[in-house]
Image (cartoon, rainbow, N blue to C red):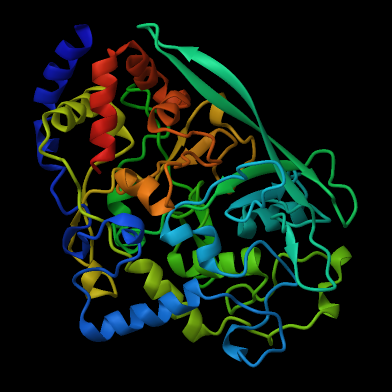
Length: 462
């Protein structure tokens, strides 16, 4: 009863947010496509000639790269060490990835980041400035578990789980999975004992260009690193190295906002995930002990500027599906609860994009439910691995648009949430929140079963 009363009172005070949930979450870019292809559609306001550009980018995103030399010289140079041979291999149907599902399963759509603690040495400080982490000396910044013929993969990723039951205030029991990561079958010596690990599944690709088009000043204005208003929320922007600009700028993309732009995010994925060089990353994630230079490559720049630009255009213009069931009473009640719990303090409902190089992305009213800032999410979700300014307990606020399409895009009843895919349901994901979200989580635990169902109905309507 207290929660319903609080919800009503806070909702009245947050009336400005009642218009934050229109049908078109991505503004005029939105698509009404549903089913397994819901995340793979071009922005609806793209012109015909730009849709052709989108298709070109899609072909390089979707089709596999091959080892060099090959007759397909525009797509050769894979490896010698890699995680997948196509972008689509991680971002399944342009959606999220998943952890290994059974013993021996390949971790193709989940990556393991590696690093070691930094020292105060000038060498380490210079590396930190431009890379954000100190790569593990033998294996680099990312474990590659696949390799081209005659090369050896770095190792094998294994995930196991400890199950524990959380009892909510009304007696409802929810089983949560605590993941445990191990790396076996190492082919290039032992990892350092102080190696830091971070397992991360691929994120959905929708609406990324719109997030890029939100004015930086708007995002920075929401920072409150010292929690000066004492609301328990202290978001801050990551500051990362922009290879093209040659300076530190605000980070927006990746689980810890470690990349400044989609152009660099894509180039980084080509280098780390597929072993492909580009103008932004002249070397892949191959260390001295791995002797990668003895294997064939696809040329000095394996990913040309034209190809990188095409893939970037594609990733900028993947449309956000329209909302569903938003007029149902349970969804409306769930929205009120979402606001009353304070979830919108980090998952900011709406923005208007600024001027972007792409007219389709400019001046759009969008509803992504994120602030793109770093927040302390508690010890339960901590990977204890810093990245630029982000510490081991901080994560970027995930956009919530498209949540209701997750399972159908995955093509099964399974949808995996949070950075390592540990949560199998949205309720599980909520119950892993801690740190700055601890109070909101406790309120969810105290809510009635019906109120929790309404909250989930709202999230699934996005």
